[in-house]
Image (cartoon, rainbow, N blue to C red; front, top):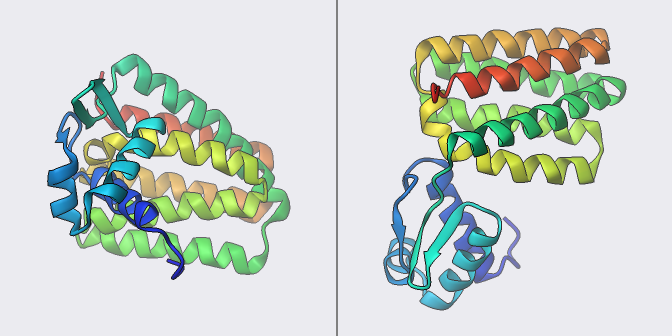
Length: 211
């Protein structure tokens, strides 16, 4: 992180990490005092961080004095994943047109690292690498506005991160889907890559086992 990072940005980033890593579960009550103590920060930047996280949908203010980690309904989750599916399919289609050998090799390294962490049962590490894999595809697509939209819906969908990629069968399916995505990227087949990404995101939804 840059040295110029503000305290409120730092508080937001750290709180976001706690939510997305499952340390603050869906429905958990959030207070300025408790969160400030947990982060080792004063309450002012934490207050601003909470306000920002409410605005992006990771926290929810259910009354003037009560804020919780957002807990999504099934219909909301389904819609979020459908939007993510459309956006990520477009991103990988663009990426097939623009990817360099160096970028492909970076994706392959992330994929191999995921296979290693999965074999070791390091689910948290696998989750982080999975996000990095997708983010790199968005970067390769070279469409900043598209990437911003994807980032927003991904953060909402990741509220369920603890329910999808913690099962060996689910992780194995995810790895196989990544392998197919890499093959399509290597072949420069944007239509196939788009279709495979759609199926991959759909699979991510069903692996949550919400239905």
